[in-house]
Length: 439
Image (cartoon, rainbow, N blue to C red):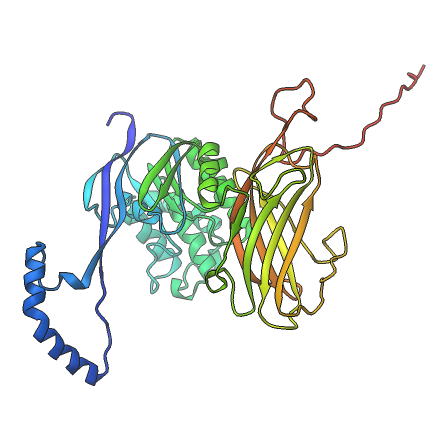
């Protein structure tokens, strides 16, 4: 394992899920006892034939991770992304030795510091001061090392006034700041962080990002899980992509983020929910469809010409007469950096929408947003579709519901064959005049 900080070899993790009811009325309890007693011999024979015990039929096995393998060199910063339930947090718990793998082997070389959730390792009855020493001791630091870093930890966490207050009286943001400060400043050789920017204001998030960058620069190995794709792509050169407990991609950050967005969004230029009962939404409004269209192309399309207008359609069903509804969308680039947000509100829309702030009768509606030609740069973009009511009361939000590619067919490229900088590439007015030099 020379030169490696972490090696994960064929790791799988399973959990047993019981389906037995936790509470019964007394009459149900007596009925179940009688029924189970009558069925027990047959159930035991079936379970024995299958290699299980009498109670195995009431238990399912969930594989949170399946045959995951990768290596992390010393000093590397590795990001891990995937949808909720992909196995990211389970993997970090295995690496932090909170639990062990069902199969496979994990080798770790170095002292590990972990921050897996708000208040990780915090004892609610102890003060902030006591928790700093407790957390430091847990990850293997001496009291002398903790004292040397104590003032820096407290200052970063911005809890100096409350160091002698029990942590149970801290807000979630204060707990997060203190937990992160301890994990980052006590100089572990391997730092494992789950959703570091999930809690805290913008100023604290900026401080966290700066600390993570400093930790990486000093040679600490970092493993980071986050849904903040622009942040993780900026911080990590390499990403792992998990899906349904399996490692499906390992490579450069920008490529893996683009692949992730491609797996979470419809790539045919259209997504439709034909059954209103199963469509995203609630008793007020249900989404019906989201599409990308372009003039000259029959039907929805995932590929658009940079030199033509792009129409994004949002169709929804209004289920309560008289609701004042609006449509909106967010557009993100290939690494999930927000490009723009817009809506049908008259304060935002360039044109006056006929249904803006008007009571909607029952029925289906289609809102169309037109993105002008020669506005977006080349690349993949994802669409988040929103329908709300009033001024800003979101009712249904379909995040990254579909994606499309913008292609330069040659009109703007001219003799230049490289990649233009930026996420937008509008044609802007320029003029040049000859002026006389001063004598």
